[in-house]
Length: 332
Image (tube, rainbow, N blue to C red; front, side):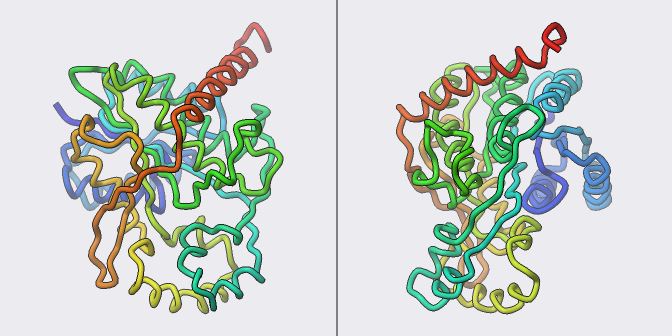
């Protein structure tokens, strides 16, 4: 039977590059582009279909920043498929990024320049907002919406005879120092993106603990430093004209500057062919590109602990109950 692959945030950037690479590897999969903007998803589907005319490619409208949209999207998935083999949780936002130009200029001429670009530590802050669901937007989009999607389509993912993969697009920007269990939505800070990515790392560990015996396995990927619309929105265009040559030069000395979405999708594609049971539940799989442009994957232990992952998981369970209670018809 054809493998079923669902990719959120698939209409551009790393998500679209992943879809292209998946189809080039196996055009017999059933690929679903799960996107917020249906028109952009359709445009991406047509572009993929033109280069892979025999492929089975469909679109699904789903906004992981809205619980109602996730519930509707999950309902449609359950109507379309009997199982899902690979669920790529790639959609994410970094709204209103602000950069500390003093830190940028200082960092460009310091020994920490590679780390600065790779992690954004001390460089980036964001302005968050509250959604219609009463949640912080970055947390809901990058973490909670995907969590709800997993919970809703459990029957499609949990099969001990045919294990499934849930694969998160995380980041090297996921830092313990930006996250707090007492403020897991990061309503009190200015590093909501970093906090949300660390939360996905914790959640992945918890999912493996609770679902491996049911046939669902979770993995985490870092795509490296990739130039996407999200990245380009951080600085004005003229700054990129100045910085890009420096970044290409730095890539000669580090493997984390993948630069292109194609390269950034390397670890995501690599996981597609791996046996789920053989993967390390606490590893983050990094897309790497050598100075000569060769792509490969390296794994690193995540800076997470099981106790914190369990606490976050329980908090999300409680939050899920609260949100579901709010949106049921009898409570409207």
